Image (tube, rainbow, N blue to C red; front, top):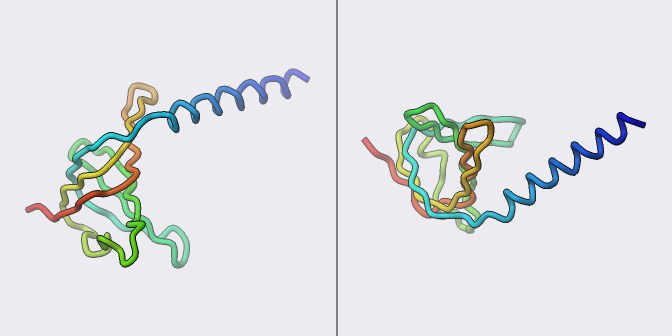
Length: 108
């Protein structure tokens, strides 16, 4: 019985954190760093940006068709990304959730 109650409490706490994250309004943010491509499963590709401090941000795909930008051409390159993101604090560390990319350009 104690295990079930503990599970229920942990679930409620987790749900509360999720609601706080979802309730945040995305703000404009500018990020710079290096893009990396990963194939998680056959045919499923994802991209991340790693900044100078080692923070890793998942890059969302373009939701427009035809795609406004193609992340593949930025693989392995340093870029500047402007987009909409929420920033959460977890254990004293910032977690940036990039929801949409407005512009992306290669920087030298």
